[in-house]
Image (tube, rainbow, N blue to C red; front, top):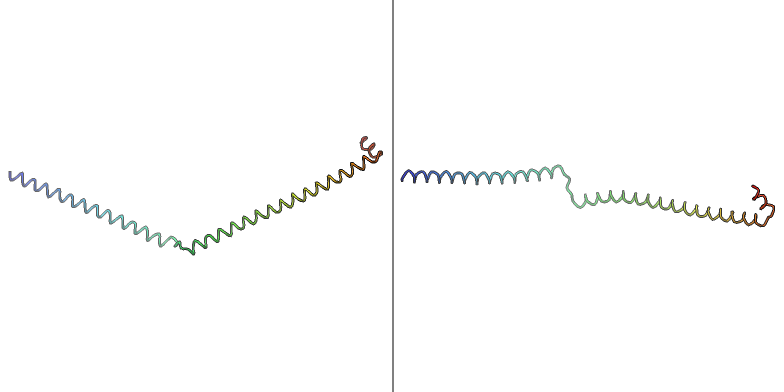
Amino acid sequence: MRRISESAASVGRIEQAARDAAAATAAEVDRMVADQSDAFRELAQLYLPRLDDDVERDGWSEVRATLQSIILRKEDARRLASSRFHLAAEQRATAEARWKALSDRAANCPHAATNLRNN
């Protein structure tokens, strides 16, 4: 009976030692994860620029300048297309007016009408 009691006590001590080792290992893992997070944070602070209001504002001004340039080019192209359209419309109106004038002249001149029919 005493040997059973001693064996049970021994198993209890082994079990407690195993629990203590598991708790120590878990604590060590937690500490290592925290250290790793701290290391990543330190690396980021060293190698990545600080993103403060000035950096954001400067970055936006660079993008804004590019966007303004694109918008100005688009507006210039639109103005050019519009002026070409108006010029073409004026040329068409002039051509139609000349055509009408020549048609009226031909209709009022019997000799020209005969020449037009023969050609």
